[in-house]
Every structure is written in C-alpha cells, then in structure tokens.
Image (spheres, chains in turn purple, red):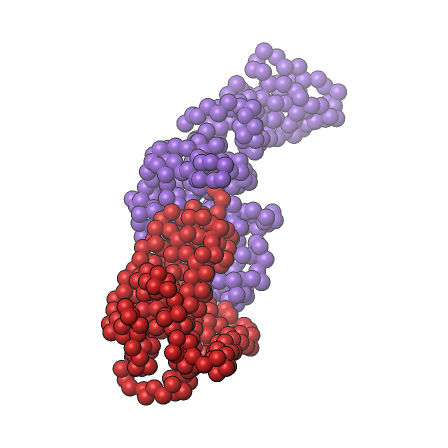
Length: 317
Length: 269
C-alpha cells in the first residue's frame, strides 16, 4: 500500500539546511495499523506530509496506493483521509451536517451513498445530536469525532492521523480508539497513526516505527521492541503469609523480587528469560498464593529510553 | 469540468452562508467599501476643478480612469484577497493550506471559492458607478462597443491585478513570511494607472504597458471610450492588444503560482 525508498526532505532555514527526513525506507501492507512515533522535530509530520502529497521530497521516492503523491496529488486525495489533530477540516461557522454534505460533493460521493454512510458514522461516533450544531460550538472531543467521520466519509484506503487524541479526556480518547480499531478491522483501512501518546500505539497498532533525527531507528512489532530493548514485565502476587520470603532460585532465570509490602510482592522478570507461566508455577510450588496479576511493560518507558539515547538505536525487524 | 465548477460554486455558497450569520455587518462593510471609492473620486474632482486639468485631461475624464481602476481592483480582490501576503502567510502558518492540499481540488480554486469577499464587490460596484457618472459628465454617448470596451477593461485589469496576486503568492510560499511587494503593486499599480499616462516618464509607461500591463487594460481602452488620442507610442488602437497581452500576463501569474505550490514548504516539520 505504501512504499518509501531512501526518502529525504531538506528544509532551508536561517541556520542553514536541516535534513528533516534523512533517508528512510519502509513498506506498509494494505490493512496494517502502523504507529509512527518520535520526539518533536524528528520528522514524523514531514514524512506524513510527503506521503499525503503536501510536500515534495528532496530525494528518494514514495508510492501510496500505486500513486506518486506529489505528482498525482488530486487523484491520491480521493483515496486517502488526513486528520491533523490540532487543525480542523470542517467548516467552522456552519452546522456540522453541511461539512459532511460539502465533503460528499468534493469527493463526488453519490448522495444516497453519502447519506447511508453518514448515518452509520453518526451512529458509531454518536454524532446524531450534533449534526445541527455549528462546528465552532463543538467540544474538542465532539469535534475530533466529527473530524474522523469527515476523513473517512469518502471511504479512504489509507488514513493518516496526526495526533488524533491530543488534548482529549479519557472517555473521548477511548471513543476515538474504538472507532479506529473497528475501521481498521471491518473496512481494512490502512492506518498510519502519528502520535506522542504511546498508549494509542500500544492499544491500536500492530506495528511501530520510531523516527529520530530523520532516520527510522525502529520498525517492528511492539513485542519485538521489548525483546530488542530488554524491557521487563512485572508479576504481582499476594501471598497468604505476609511474613514469607520469596527466595529466587536458579530456576528463576534472573527474576527478582523488587518490592515487598504486606501480603504483596513485586517480581520483575525478562520475557525472553522466563515465561510468566513458568514463574507462577515456581512460586505456587513454594507458597500459597491469594491472587496474582502481570503488569506488561510500558511502551512509553522503553521509547523514552530510546529517545534519551540510553538504548543504542539499533534497527531491527 | 461543469461538475468541478459546481463544486467551487458550492464552496463559495458555503462561504457566503458562513458569513450570513451577520448580514448587517456584511451590508455595512460593502457600503463602506463603496463610499471610500466615492470619496476618492469626489476629492479628485474637487482638486481638478480648482487646478484645471492633468496633462490635458479634465476631471470627469480622469474620474473615468479612477472608476475603471477601482472596479478592476475590486473584482480582483473579491476573488483573490486571500492571496495577499498577510492572509496567505497566515493560512500557511496555521497549516490551513496543508489541509487544502489534501483535498481533491485545485488549491487556487479552493482559496478563491472559499473566501469570496463581499466588501470588494462594493468597490467593484462603486467603481462601475464612477465610470457611468464620469462618462456622462465627459459627454460620452454609450454604444454597445463602448460598453463592451469598459467591460473588457475591467476584466482585463482585474486579470492583471489577479496575476500580480498570484506572483506575490508564489513568493509567500517560498518565504512563508510573505512580502509586501505584491500589495504595493496591487494598490500602488492600480493607483498609478488611475492617471493619464502622459504624466509618467517613458520608462514607467513601458512597464505599465508591456510588463505589468495595467495601463494597457485601463488607460488604452479609456482613450477609445473617450474618443481621445494617446501620446506618441501609446496609440488608441493598442486596445486590440489589451485582451491577449493581459491573458498572457495572467498565464505568467498561473505559472508562478504552480511553481510556488510545488515549492511550498509548509509551516514547521
């Protein structure tokens, strides 16, 4: 669906040329849900703007759904949806319904199709009561749902999202994420999600690409990210005997008790060394356990360590 | 083609509806824009009544040039005011233009259709009013040919001003900041073209006829309407060249715009 080879973009600034995208390669299959992360100024938005035909690359090439974006911008525009979280694509002073009607005309969607699709989107995104409200009067959460509906009304094959959950409360974030997950699953829409919110990525994306200083420093699954960067999981157990001590044996494969408080013990372990089932088995053989849970590693934590350079940027995948 | 045009008309209608929340303000703005033209023409006439003529042109004759200049400037700005540096650089910096580029439409068509400015239509109407009034005072008898010539003059001069806006917009895309040079030509150029060409040196005349052909669009057709002969090197028959030369200049503006969009850098990374 998307193929980038040696993609580059150089900007001229007062302080000399800046290479915002310094030669990146990737290939995205149809139906993939890709998270695209990186610190501010890493080149995320620039890449998205090149893929959506807004910017002309300085070098390399990119093909989106068989089209070269900057050369066939208008044709491509009919097949992609773009949502920039901090900007609106809706008609600010008009009732929301009119934005959808105008988009229907812009994308030449037959009126009957538009009405049917809008009904469905309005139901899923709970927009029904908002259709008569001018866009400027919508809350941020309401507006973002409306932006998503507007972007997918023409049934795009690829959806580019730039910070779609920025500034939203927990409930609104959940609504946006549910919608995107369903869209990807049911319609097979390819989604490229640029975000700072790594929860978005952890909850939605099958694949993560991390860019820094214009280069792709990671491209793979989130599981592989943990393996590659040695992130750890946490087993939390409540022991029947609060005075009991857990002594890590040789079978524990490096797992260690990092905290003890009353009945509760926190045990950190590396997934590639020992599985949660094995570790639980070892503990159960030794202790009576009231309850247990496993805390998955925080993607944010791993990514933050990568950004800070604590983990050498070794590309895998 | 017709379908595409319909889309732009719908966009324009939406822009008007978005504005129609405040119809009174809209009317007042339009009237005010017209009044400015009336005051300027009145000032000119009062001035000339006192001091006689400019290069042999009487007050109503110069007022006719004023009317043509205002009308064409109003028409061009009604369509293209968003191309002016301060507006366009704002659209670029806010990222609005990024979004326009993700639509399956021509970005120029979008900008024109989405921001039709009624105030400048006030200037257009007042300019046409000034032409009618001035022609009457100058003793012009209206024939179909003269009416056509006035229409041609307004449309061609508007095309020249619009082309200047396009060229300025191309610079705005490249620099993001935008420069005031374009506005200087839009306002200053039409202002200079509101006076008989005899008062300018040959260099300036050459520029206004062949480089930025505002004089070819305003002064030359006015010569024919008023039944006057032009100065040496600027005969009335040049009116035949008005349409093709202005069309060529508009084409240059279109090319500049395309180049600008191609090199559009956007706001930030």
